[in-house]
Image 1 (tube, helix red, strand yellow):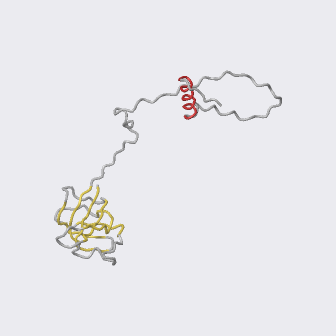
Image 2: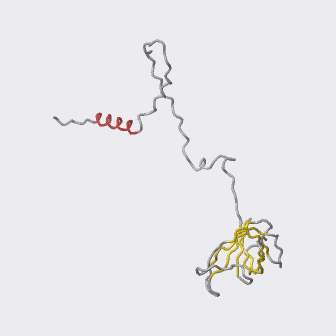
Length: 180
C-alpha cells in the first residue's frame, strides 16, 4: 500500500469535515411526522430541501448589558444588625431579661426584631469565645436605662466542657445580636 500524499486542499477538506462532525453536523433534521395508516401506497414525492433558518446571534456581553433587566430579580434585601453586651437578670419561661451594659449601635432594638443570645465562654481578662444559646425576638422596644426583654423561641442545648449547662443564670455575661 502506498502512503498518501497530503496536499494543502486535502488537509483543509479533512479539517472542515472533522469540524462539522465534531460540532454535530449543523442543525438536526426536523422530526418525522407521526405515521398514519394509508389505504394505498403512494410513491414518494420529491421535495426540495429547505434552507436552514439563520440562528439569531446574541449581542456581545459587555459591561453595559451584564446587569439583569430592571424589575426582574432585582429585589435587594438589606439586613442590619447590632449588638448589646450585658448580664442576665432573670429567666422565667420564655421571657429573658438582660441588663444592658454596652450597645454597639445607636439604633435600639424594636419589638419583634429577630434576636440571638450568645454566652461568653472563656476566662476573665482573656480573649473570649461566644456560644449561641438561644434564638428569639425582642419582646418590648428597649428604652435607655431599662432592662431588655427577649422572648426565647429556640433554646439551644449547648454543653460547656462536655457537661449540660444552664446558660441563663443571673449574672451570666451575654451578647444580644438583633436584626432589623
